[in-house]
Image (cartoon, rainbow, N blue to C red; front, top):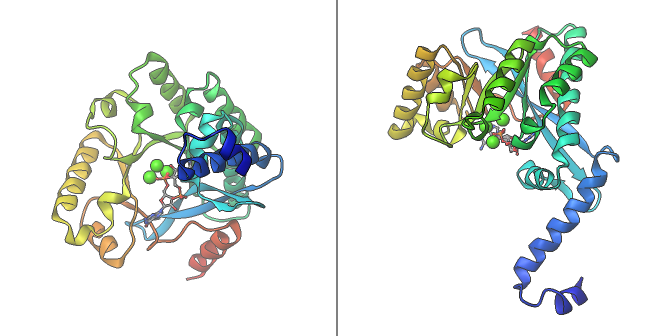
Length: 279
Ligand code: C2E
Ligand code: CA
Ligand code: CA
Ligand code: CA
């Protein structure tokens, strides 16, 4: 590595070179990670505020590597996108999430909706809808319990193919949500045009909402918009009791965040479900 620095990358500052090295090595590790079973899913509960019960769960991928330890998705998902590895990885995540959700139902837990993050490249793959359909029949999960989280970046692409795909997904019976709503674009046209069911308000608007008047105004505005368009709203980033109490005074019906529950392993999540069942 040092020799390379001297000979090959002289024009880079050491810091940039180090970042580049890490990136290249991570990408190499990433290619073997699926085969080596290095990925797992964590599950973060979503609270139904009206009925005071857990009604859904978001699947979040985790990567533990022998050499690098824990690498956050914010670092490796972009790398996986660059290398197209997101395609097999995305399928693995979708299958694993559906399989696990079906298993919980078979174990007798009250049925939950599982939300799966879909990256742009994954969504744009020509056979994305078929692969979702295939995974649903393989795992025998009722499509009504699967929710696909897409970003505004996908939704705003005004391509006939995008619209067709979203309708095909709707026809499969799965739900579509817009992740990080409010951070991307200020165009709402697509909300009317596309078959979208859920808005997930970005955490930057929610944490500290009780004392932040600007954020409170933005959230009230989104809630009113959602009500008129008949969309469900999930507030993300509920970190404190005060955040939750503020939401209880609004029309928002679903909350997700550290105060409700951290993303957790399967075992921990099951324990949480069990503890709630008994109380
Ligand atoms: P996201 O989809 O917006 O996921 C929510 C992120 O916020 C998660 O970070 C979660 O741990 C974190 N979070 C949850 N509650 C709170 C809270 O109360 N406060 C704060 N500050 N943060 C909270 P995570 O797991 O590190 O994921 C980061 C991003 O990486 C995700 O953002 C998503 O864009 C991407 N990602 C994660 N898992 C997957 C996946 O399976 N597939 C794809 N394509 N992307 C994923
Ligand atoms: Ca998400
Ligand atoms: Ca989000
Ligand atoms: Ca995100």
